Image (cartoon, rainbow, N blue to C red):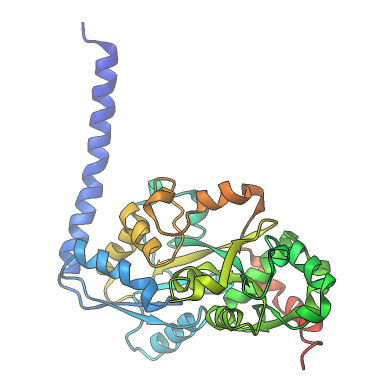
Length: 363
């Protein structure tokens, strides 16, 4: 009589092997078709230094693959695609953007290809928010401060603490804190909307307390540079994708420190999708699946992005992992910036209130 345990193991092994066959066949077919395609074109709101390790890894895996990346604003990537495709011109095969509201509009116009990643089974459900849309990274927004100008007792670890320190030292801090202007682009709006709506670390009441000390800016690199030279003493909700790689700049780490906001750290999903009008769909599918895989996630981390796969450990990356962030500040203090249709519907009202609080002090 057959060993029932052995038979069960044989059955499971056979089932797994059978499931692997179509997966392997699909991968082989994509590789075959990719070899006949042209250069892969990617539009993103990522700098060249963010892309370099990913592109190197892609070329190592697929030597024939040529990749061109264009760095634009998080909303501009979509606007350029719309303009080019409406005129019948070549446009992006893949779009990468950390602008949830813009992705909702893109999906509403049916511009996301119906791509099912071969990595889907290894990815958490939240990372696949819309059909065909995946998540490249889950990037935290961090707090930075000039430690050369702030003594230890004035160095904040949370936003409420920063507001209290500023209120106790109003002349020192007036107009010397910075953050993204919610009005200038989709990423800035999504971050501020999510944090204020969640009330972590605080809602409009906390923003009102901070506003006399805040000047808003449009870009993370600008904010970091101005904190470094002392124009600002601190900044909050600044993208770690900008901050962490630039901390390697000569002398910067001696002047600037960064922190995860202990009472509420926004985490932005960086959406990635093959476009419906991609001219190199097989190459796009290979690239997307590489970036979602364990090797690709580690490569992305080398460029400053934050991997979210549970099988990527903190010791394997130079900066952060999503699991590591949760361990540091507690999962309850993660503010996940989601794909919420209210974000789109409330835009005009939110911006009016934002301007009334933060821009009445300009000048």
